[in-house]
Length: 166
Image 1 (cartoon, helix red, strand yellow):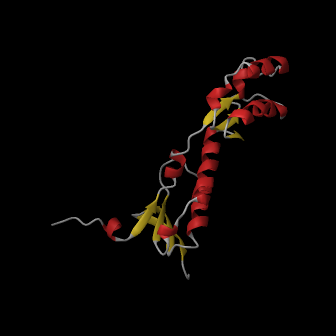
Image 2: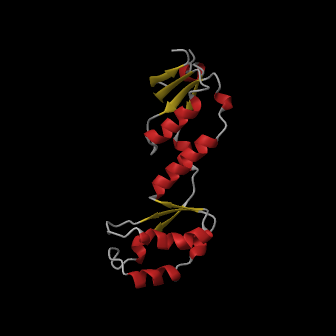
Image 3: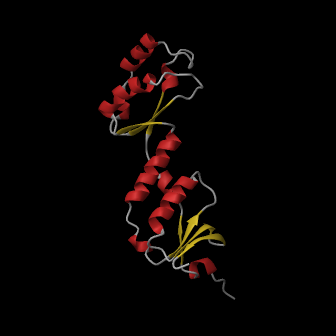
């Protein structure tokens, strides 16, 4: 008696949104490092901190600019940091590393070629990983015009999302 992999035999193509998150590389800059006790912004000291920072560490990288503490900061705080980052990094981004990686993944999905999925039955993998609805929605946006059908979940247990002609 031989076992048959019914999922493989079904012709479903499984797409894991997590793969777009995992390939995104970025650097982080935590503003809290330049604050007194991580909470208090003193302009003169903060400017000195920025002047003494080795900005070459961010060369040609996308940089997530955030504050890891609940410090209340004026909007110009991030502009002061951005003033240095703009000269060295690929792109400064106001937000956490996860938010930046998510935005980079969505940008990559929107520019990727998906013609190999034309007329296919697709499952957008939905269990595990750190991806969000934003990422799977970006995939749906790209795949719906070309796919025969799109489901969400795992191949053994899916929720139908789209079927051409239905």
